[in-house]
Length: 186
Image (tube, rainbow, N blue to C red; front, side):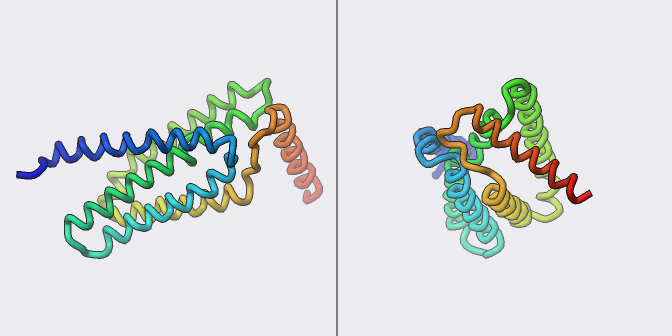
């Protein structure tokens, strides 16, 4: 008897969504308690480990049931930690870092950039699957997660508890210092 594939897919989707809801609640609480940078630095390694588990699950041959269990758990963990960190925080940071006079335009540009990135991932996924396989795709995503963690560690400041004016000034000073450093080099 068992569950039909289409029913199993719907069940997994429903369970994943139900598990993401508490993760969103935790993220909303931790956003201002732990801070945005801390959440990014702590959730990105979990995303990376989930992707590594997906790579290993597709490279190491195991039974189909064990493979399905490992894949499902890895994807659910990935989704839950994505909605806690890398999903909402870039949007929040984009709304905080720009000066008030250009904030609306800059947020629109950031949103456009996110959507273009989403379209690129969506339309290149089938091409990458046929050329490098599922393990290769997850491996590339793992490399991107590693690069993202390094970028956050080196370049993203903590904005928790800071007024928008202070954050804008902080980034304005950083931009002025970069321009001054470029002028000295030339």
